[in-house]
Length: 355
Image (cartoon, rainbow, N blue to C red; front, side, top):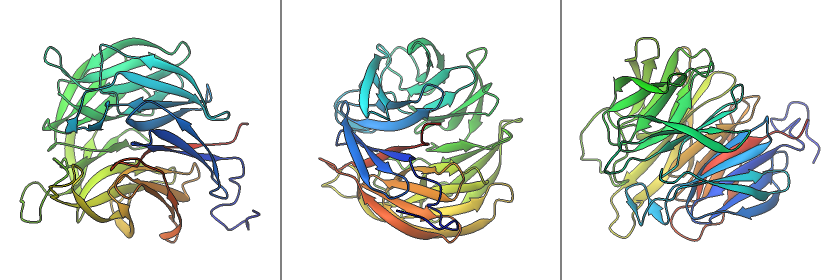
């Protein structure tokens, strides 16, 4: 399909969007220019997040549990799956045992390091496993002093890492060169996060959505995005959101994207009862609210195209991906992701065509 030069689809021929289905359990691949479904790869149960390594041209996929969710599962998995996105075949399964509950992924291409957040156990806190992306072997782990570090991000220099903790009242700051915990930033249980392009600020969604069953009568910390000064490890601002924010993403053009989920208790659903969610857009530098748009139910992951023109919002309850033109805040299309249980679309990765 030929695109006009002004179209946000222009120049995407050969690019691919990869999307996890948590209950699939699969990774689906779509043509980024036409949204055509290219194929599906089956993976281990409960895949969660994706991370594309452009230097090795490989896709990493975490599998957190045997079944269920963070707060209600039948046991934690220990594996990370490596996929060739061009052939859509599994290349290797890396077993991190005795580490378990792998979830968040952050990549340092310069040092060939992949950081994977893992949950704690009775004898040790949660932490971050360091993997050599050349050998695909674990090199060690960094403790975060919290039971459930979930999302993880690093600064552009690759020296500092930040782990959000769902149930611990702080964000863990770690020195990646020394492999040590250096600070705890006071934040009510936290969800997604993103680090600014210059590494000076960290944007953290808080508070934690709890059991995914909150009510309008509950009172607690203001929902929104906490802005952390990375140099002082302190919260310096809060960008308010109407509902609980879960995923956070920064585009290459400096737009801060937050996915809000509207949740209520449902005795028949571990995920709770959800209404349509919301994508809220802020300017990362001025913190100004630039607008919002309705998306699917329970947005859980956000990514964007390399040029920052398109946002992709994966919604786990409706198992959809909304593709948003960020210039107009209009939805271009909605992808339906197959699922076999309650939890559907989750982790995503934008994969540019081979050079």
